[in-house]
Structures are given as C-alpha cells and as structure tokens.
Image (cartoon, rainbow over all chains, first blue to last red; front, side, top):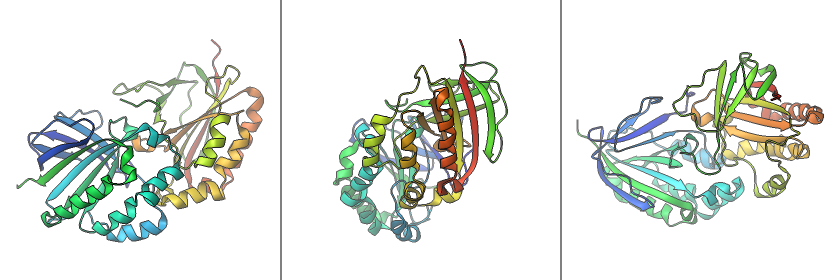
Amino acid sequence: MFRPGMHPVTFVAKDSGPFEIERISAISGDELAFATHLAVHHEPVGLSHPRGAWVLRGVTGHVRYVERAEKTQLDPASPALGRPEATCAALIPIRKSAEWWALPQDERRAIFEQRSRHIADSMKYLPRIARRLYQARELGEHFDFLTWFEFAPEHEAAFDELLAMLRSREEWSFVEREVEIRLRRSRT
Amino acid sequence: MFRPGMHPVTFVAKDSGPFEIERISAISGDELAFATHLAVHHEPVGLSHPRGAWVLRGVTGHVRYVERAEKTQLDPASPALGRPEATCAALIPIRKSAEWWALPQDERRAIFEQRSRHIADSMKYLPRIARRLYQARELGEHFDFLTWFEFAPEHEAAFDELLAMLRSREEWSFVEREVEIRLRRSRT
C-alpha cells in the first residue's frame, strides 16, 4: 500500500539478526529491554506480529523543516545506507513533549533551526555519517521518530560529537524520551 | 496506544450507520464505490477489519503549515464537532502528487498560503463550517488526508463556495485524487 519513496520499517530486538547490539542506553525517560541482536524489516509487516524483546515501527516521509537552500546542500552530501565500510550503526528512538507538538510550524522551525541549528550543524558530519529518519507518531507508536545512522568505525568519535551537539541545544529540551542503541553489523 | 490529542478514525461505507450518504462525486481520479451509509469509528480499529464498500483510516496530528499569528485567529473561531444544528456533513479524501511531497517545507508553505491563501480565505467560513483534518499518508493509506466537515443546512451554499475557492487555487494543481462524499446525519 505504501507509495514509491515511502519506506516502512520494523525494528525487532531479538536473539539473532544482522546487527549485534553493543549497548542500549536510556538518555531520557524509560529504558528499552536488552537483547543481543536487531533485525530490520523493510517490507510492511501488516498483520504479522514479530516477536521480540521490543518492536518499533516507522515510515519514511517528506521533509518537515528542511527548506530549499538546505535541501540543495544536503541532498548531494547525503550518503546512501549500506556502504560496505559502514559497519557501525545506531538506532535512536525519540519522543518529543506535548508542548512541542502544540507549537505552530513557525515556532517549531525557529527552535529547530534558527536557535538549535539542527540542519546547519549536522551538515559537517556528512558524508561520514549516513542517516535515515522514520516517522512513528502517526502510527500510534510510543516514539515520534526513529533515526537510523551508519558509519565506519573510524568515525565513531565524530558520531558521538554529533549526538552531544544535538543534545546540548534548545530543541532537545522538548525530548521527553530518548534511547540510544549502538550496533555492529554481524559478521556473516 | 495513541497519545492525548491524537484521534484515530476509521470511516466505513456500509448499509447502515449514523450518516446517510447523499452522493459521492469523483472530483479528480478514481471514484469510490457507492454505499448508502457511513459509520465513523473513533477508537483505534487495530487488527479488526471492518467490512464495508470502502474503509478509510486516518489520525489527527499537529499543524503542518499554520503559524502562530494564524493559530491565534483560528483557534477561537473554530467550532467543535457535533453541534446539534450541524446535520450536514462532508468527507473529502485527498491525495497530493509525488511532486508536492518532494518539495521542501518553505515551498509547500508558499504555495499553500502565500499563493493559495488556504488559511486566510478559509477563515471567513468560520464558525459556520466545522472541520477536522485527519492524516492518512503515513498509515500507508491510498489518500494523504481525510477532511471532515459539519455545517447546518442553511450553510450548504457557503460550504460549496469554500470548496470552489480551494479548488480554484494553485495548491489544488497538486491534488491528483479527490472524492467528495456528502452526508446527512441519520434520523434516529
């Protein structure tokens, strides 16, 4: 049922799968249960209920805050997922507060970019860190967004720096739950 | 699973229900099958599959284009649903083109409001016409939005004028499917 360009995803934490879970850290709010592996399903799971320590669903969508001038810079600099050298990954589910969602579009954009520089200051980590944002809020999920990152081991410090930068800004004061799941592609 | 303020909805076309279907018109793209009645379920339907000539699902969400100055005018003027005198209703499912969804936020906003005056020119129909917008795109539905309207019979001409206004503007050139379903609350 999903249209071209909309990619549904289901992340399932379990005891085998293409990614090994190195650690799960609750940054704000409740933890997610530990598991050893993560499976990533890109087909719609529909009625099937995958079993796992936890299951998170999302879908890619259109950009919510990016403007034309930013898109012109972002698109050519953004790497594809699945680069062979990018054996490190992270999944970061986030939930923002009711206060955030009650703000009109111009005020959310001002916090996101004019004051927190989410887009501008993330740009310098491209193309080292590949990123895909999944929307989950409209699906009735507990989290609003699931962000997936991929990078080579030598860029792990840069990734940590990117997370620290985002978390230090005003936008993040609206984040009421955040879990960081660090992963390695399983050797096969 | 849905948070306070997010209202899932399932519209089911069938042979009995609280709304009588007066007519179904395909404005752009394919028709929806005829049925005599419409049921509106506000609880999440989850795994249950309601049977009907057609079933449309959506969920309310945060505002996508409305800015603070507009919200300040809109909120006090917007009537609640379910007014006893508002016995006329309409359900208008819409799907916008891939071209629309590929545009960055600033260009969609410019078409929506600066050039099509969607918010400003709809304002004068308040509080006569009550409106609730449901998002459907992220659910993998065929339509992007389901808009529900309620009004008293004496405001039917105003409602027709509102639709004609919206359809005459640049924003509507991105609408690739639109069906208009006109309804009356069933006498009970």
